[in-house]
Length: 105
Image (tube, rainbow, N blue to C red; front, top):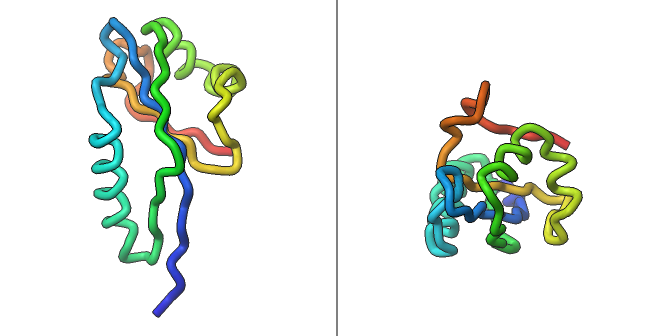
């Protein structure tokens, strides 16, 4: 059998009183990661959540994240450029030109 590759991840959940903040809990995030890990298991890849952080921000700040992620993450102490960093918002609706998100190193 092939050796399993473990991929460490840090998860950030945007919280806001507006339309873009997520309502996900730690349990929700862990379930999503387990589900994704089951998909990757066929390639001997396991996703492992290292830390879940909840970020209290405004919808405007969430919009700034999607416009300039590198500037936004520079101010997040738990961000680790050597791991996969996942960000959850409630919706991408209302963000001009955004229909999916991926950021690479």
